[in-house]
Image (cartoon, rainbow, N blue to C red; front, side):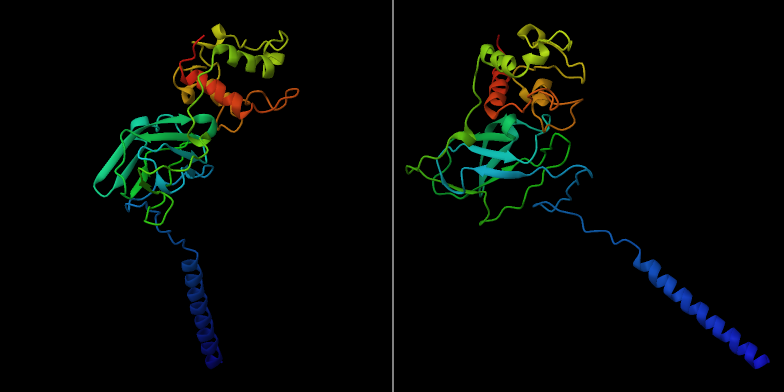
Length: 279
C-alpha cells in the first residue's frame, strides 16, 4: 500500500512538473517581440504615423530622372495634403552634388497636392545632383514624411546640361493662375448659388464682402487668408478629400446635383487666394 502511494505521489509530482514546464513555455511564446525601429537614410529613428493615418510620401516627381536644364523646375506630388506649418518655401528641398548644394524656392499647389520648386541659381553642367526634400514635412493629419534613402540608381538623380532638351508637358510645374474675383464668383454662381442664394437654407452668402475678412463659424480660421490658400478654410471645405473638416465638404454630397468642383475650378479659386484675393 505504501509503495502504491509512493508511486502515485511520484507520478503526481512528475505531472505537475510537466504542466509547469509547458505553462512556462507557452507564457514565453506569448511575450511580444519588439520590432526593430524604422530608420531614415541617416540612421535616425522615424516617428510613426497614428493608427488612422498613413505616411506622407512623394508619389511622383517631374521632370523624369536624367538630364535636366541648368535651372530646372521640379514638381513633387504627394499622397496627401501638407500641413501648412511644416511647409517652408525656402527650406523645402535641396539639390546636392558632393559638396555643392543648391537651395531654392517653392510654392504649394494645394489642389494637386503638389509642391513646385526651383533652384535659385543655375546648376553646374555635368555634375550628378540628388534632390532631398525636407524631413520636417508633415501631412494635414500630422503624419510624418517618409523619405526613401537615395542612391545612384534611384529616381532622384539629375544631371544638368547646357544642351537643348526635348520639351515636356508643362502641366506638372505650371504656376497657379491669377484670376479675377469675377471668375471666382462665376464658379460660385454655377455650383453653389442654388443653395447659398436660397433664403430658406439661411446659408452664408458667397459675395466678396461676405467672404473677405470673415472667420469660419466652425473652426478658428479665416475663410480666406490672402496669399495662403492652405490656411484658408474655404479651400479645405471645397476639397472633398481634405481630412478633419467640420461637417461636410462643399458642395455637400447630398445636395441636388452636387459634384466635386473640377480641377480647373479648384485651381482658379486657389490661384485667386494665392495672388491676394483681390476684388
